[in-house]
Amino acid sequence: MSDDLFSALKKRLRLFADERDWDQFHSPKNLSMALIAEAAELIEHFQWLTEEESQTLSTEKQAEVEAELADILVYLVRIADKLDVDLLAAVDKKMAINEQKYPIEKARGNAKKYTEYNE
Amino acid sequence: MSDDLFSALKKRLRLFADERDWDQFHSPKNLSMALIAEAAELIEHFQWLTEEESQTLSTEKQAEVEAELADILVYLVRIADKLDVDLLAAVDKKMAINEQKYPIEKARGNAKKYTEYNE
Amino acid sequence: MSDDLFSALKKRLRLFADERDWDQFHSPKNLSMALIAEAAELIEHFQWLTEEESQTLSTEKQAEVEAELADILVYLVRIADKLDVDLLAAVDKKMAINEQKYPIEKARGNAKKYTEYNE
Amino acid sequence: MSDDLFSALKKRLRLFADERDWDQFHSPKNLSMALIAEAAELIEHFQWLTEEESQTLSTEKQAEVEAELADILVYLVRIADKLDVDLLAAVDKKMAINEQKYPIEKARGNAKKYTEYNE
Image (cartoon, rainbow over all chains, first blue to last red; front, side, top):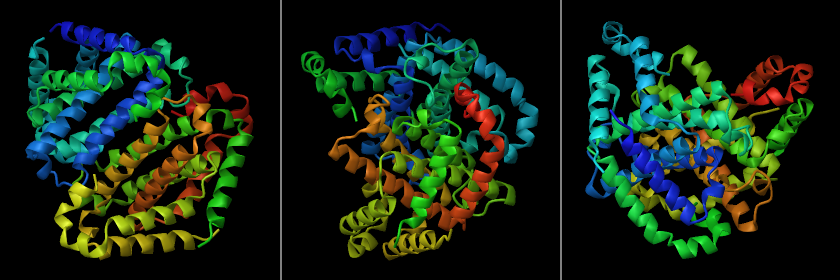
């Protein structure tokens, strides 16, 4: 798997910020705040829905949710750029840890324990 | 730009959840909560740092931050899978909107206004 | 209703911070990050539970949730202190707005619309 | 210190929800989502400000921040009501723990370590 896609996204967002002289505002600290604010806009779409309702959204809500997911990805990639993080390598590393932490056999037998060991 | 990468990530995470019988917990509502919880773990790394300090992390903190970014990406891709969202298309759409909303000339001349029109 | 309680809490938390020389870290910006991090710890307790399960917690989880609620209140009062906000007056003001915005008759007849107008 | 104030607030918010038939939406799970969404609206006011700027807000921004703080308090009290939590007792308990965890002498000498032990 190559991270050309993330490299391209990083460049695109860097250019967007540079052209507007916005790089000065984009410290990792500030970007982490912007990211969580977008994550909260996603939360707002789901907070009064049942879990089931959250799976089948109206066309309008679906479009809004897609825009929130885009915003989250934008800030995520922007932070990764500022801190020089290879997002794909980071996911690979994390998935390897998770596979060790939650072996299939043990996890299957403990689906009900999910709530505890995923806190 | 192709979204083969996101397709591959979606499949990988779907398999991981299926093997553990965890799909039952992964409603978009629940996943949005898990995502914001990870975004908050990122916030915790930066909350008492100055903006400047947040740009040059210790090796240990950098590794922890990379793991948080991976966690956020994992839940983001998982939600996109559950709601059948093409993340790259969503970003393209959002960037087009942002380019219209914040034209370069107007944005440059108003760097100080950034705080207002990005709320 | 008097806000003597909040005044007392403000003083207590101010003293706690001053004694430890921590006031230097407590800008409203930083405190808003600490507050949302605590709100996310609350989220983590509920993210894989059903709504029903979230209403009847085990003794252990109940104690943990109580501690998170306390943490949120602590940072809320601390921000209110730093920005000289009278929390009770703020709630009174907001409740008056909400009463106008969501008149009883209209709200009752539209319980199903709750998800839309509370986003 | 008495918690009559919180008891009064609980009753007031309970009545407000009951009159509108909104209690059905107010599971602790859902309320924790609403609370973090309000905490994020607070974050949005501060995300592009410097720490210093966050301490001296314009009259308009100050009013908006006060409304966000009220919203957070409202959902906090509502969750406490649903889970039968005595917020003041919870704060007392947490403060006692914090006083033990961060003894004055050790904390003062380690102001720079604040970022580590408050993660």
